[in-house]
Image 1 (cartoon, rainbow, N blue to C red):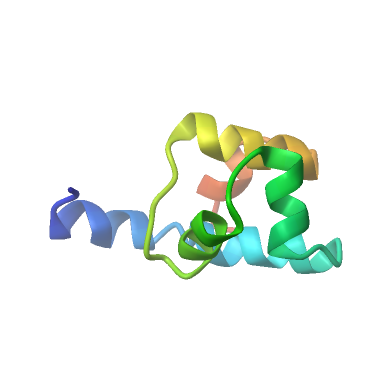
Image 2 (cartoon, helix red, strand yellow):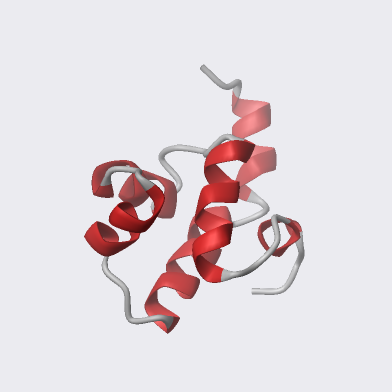
Length: 78
C-alpha cells in the first residue's frame, strides 16, 4: 500500500493519462492492449484511471507495445 505522499507524487506524472493517449492514438482497446502485454484489461483500466500505479517492469511491457521508452511516462510532455 502506498502512502498518500507517494500517491500524490506519482499522480504528478500522469502515467495513466499518457497511457490512455498512446492507446487512443493507436485506436487500440484495453482488451487488445492486454493481449499485446499479457496484462488484464481491468488492470490496464485501473492504471489509466490512476487507481493503480504500475511497476517498472509492467510499464516497460506497455512501453514496448507503443515503441516508446520509459522516459515517455516520466517527462512533462502530455
